[in-house]
Image (tube, rainbow, N blue to C red):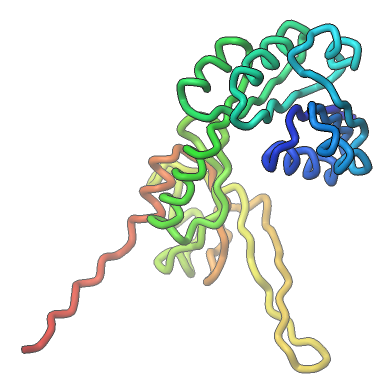
Length: 239
């Protein structure tokens, strides 16, 4: 079973730790604050009050057996940098660190972070994209410039097959799944829905109204597909 350590129990770190624990993996948490450790210790595999910049203390907690570490030390970027350097020196194979800004992100990468998350920048970008493309429901960054998204099927897609639409040629993206709501009438005459997922869509599968398409591709191609709608002429006011 994979083992993770989350260092820093602010809002971000606590959420990461609890979510990992809920998924059934072993999670160790580390924080200097006793109250923070007390509040989470019953929900994780191990909870330690410790200075994460102390290499000897970290080694004594068997951090070297961890599969991945999340450095979530909030605004204390100096501590985050030192902690990341300690984790790298100990030999943790994968380190994710939170940065306040792009400048700190570069420093964290330099000292050993494999991935750096700039929460404020990513949230700002996500909100802007949702405003521009409200039909996008879920957006997962895979690597720089490429994402996996859940997007509402456009009206002009409905009734056509994947072969006819040829997403790869037309938009430069791949459809990897189709999520669909199937209506049912219960014993009381109420309409309920079952969510089905076609995770191996074929070329002859037909897109239906309200389908959610799970697509993978370059961000610029996904954005182009989501905003390239038929433009209706604006109605002129009668004088």
